[in-house]
Amino acid sequence: MRRVVIAPDSFKGTATAAEAAAAIARGWRTMRPGDELVLHPMADGGEGTLDAFAAAVPGATRMPVTVTGPLDAPVAAHWLLLPGEPATGVVELAVTSGITLLDPLAPLDAHTRGFGQAIAAALDHGVVRLLLALGGSASTDGGAGALAALGAELLDGAGRPVPSGGRALARLAEVRLDGLRRPPVSGARLLVDVTNPLLGATGAAEVFGPQKGATAADVALLDAGLARLAELLPGTDPTTPGAGAAGGTGFGLLAWGAGIAPGARTVAETIGLPGALHGASLVITGEGRYDGQSAAGKAPSEVVRLAEAAGIPAALVAGLVSVEPVRAGFAASASLTELAGSGAAAVAEPLRWLERAGAELAAGWTDPVHS
Image (cartoon, rainbow, N blue to C red):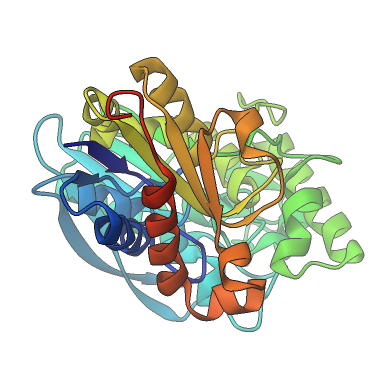
């Protein structure tokens, strides 16, 4: 009997990581009902991180909290309390200040205040360690909103608080940190899947602003505001890889005292994926789009790395495959777009085609032990 570990990321906008893992497993069982399947939904530190932890960590508790959303409307969110010691809280930016919470988008005025409020709620509960999932943000405010929610004062030339959002950062004259809450005693780790700096051609505004609805003029305004914030927050280097994550929230929370950690690697370690691979015959991972960026810290690249360390093969399932998976170390792959006949068809029924992908991989798979 084979043991197959199924560890996909979410297929953003169509299926959560847990839904994707379950669908792939259903398909696999239609062809190989006697195999042992172990589901470990993954994440890379962005959208879906809370769900990945909740599915993989027994005893994880969702802690409800109502926060100020990215455009001030209340959002019913939650953070996750992990069992054991040290008391660890996981807070995900996407559920408090994420781009999916806005329609239409508001690139100049969206903010991260709700993310800071959720962090404060975890601190109030008494956690001594924080994992902060950055990704899926609606804003480019450099984490200013989160800092304000944690007690920082961001003031204009008249000593008045500046409005929330990236638009107002250019008006900053002073940042007071006297009332800023301290990070927890065992530290705060920023889970990121990008290495972008805060400013410039590869920075938060230029690279990610257009995805949030920013025009060229908006990007210039936002980048200038981030530069002003960088001038006023001492001791933090805006060129630090990952400082540009989540619209510069990485930079703001580095100034708070957090440290950056690779998102997918930290998630994998926390959910016990390395141990689950020992003795397995195969691991299946996946994501919505497998492209040139996937090798730079995304969940599939981390799963391949762990598979190589465990001496087992890895297979890929993706909505769209635009680079050659074999070159990245995958022994087999399945594209939902190819199985469904078009991208539109795959998006319309993602679980159907994820199940089909699981069946196709199972039908074609022969491992060395059982060949």
